[in-house]
Length: 227
Image 1 (tube, rainbow, N blue to C red):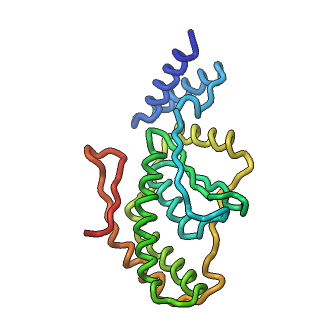
Image 2: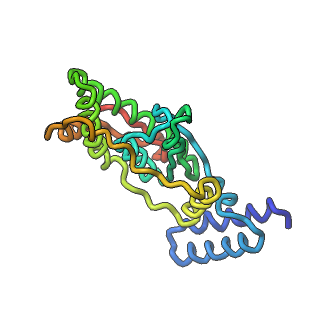
Image 3: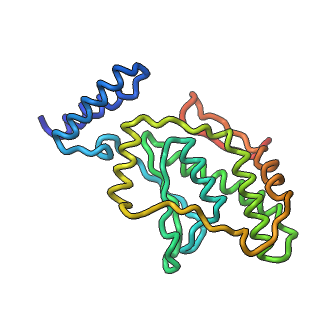
C-alpha cells in the first residue's frame, strides 16, 4: 500500500472523527492515530493545515494590545491559531500575523482580520483626530480600540475545533515555532492620559459592526460597518 493511499485512509477516518456520534468519532480517531503511528504520518500532513499572513504595519515591533485582542478574537471565531513574527526585532522590516487553520479557515481569518482592522483604524482615527498631544492620542486611541474589539466579541462565538484538526495545527506550531510565544502586545497607555469615556466610546462604535454569513451558510463571513 503506497503512502498516498494510506493518507487517503487516514483522512477518511479523521473526517469520521468529526461525527456527532461520540462512539463512532472516538473509534475513527483511534484508527486514524494507529495508522499515523504505524506509518510515521503527522497530524499536520494528514489534515493539510493552511497558512495566511497579514501585515500589522508595525515595523519590527509587537502590535498594540488591542490588535492582539482582535487577532485572538478572529482566530477563536474561525477555529484557527495565530502567531506574531518579527515583533521583537527592530531590524525586521515588518511584523506580521500568521494564521493557521484547516478547511480554508486560515484564509478566512486573515480576511476577517483585515476587514475589521480597516474599520477599527477608521473609527479610532476619527475619535482621536482632535487630540493634539501624541502620548494622549495614542493612549486614548488604544483604550478606545480595546472597547471596540470588546463590542464585536459577540459576533465571534468561539468554535469547538475537532481534536484531529487542533492536533494538526499544534503540530505545525511545534515544527515551525518551537521556542516562540505569542506576546500580549504593546501597552500604548503608559505614556499618555486617558479618560473614563474612551472605552465606552469604542464600545459604542464597535457595536455598529455587523456580521453576515456567506452564501449557503458557509464558514466565510463578511464584516461590515453598520448600515
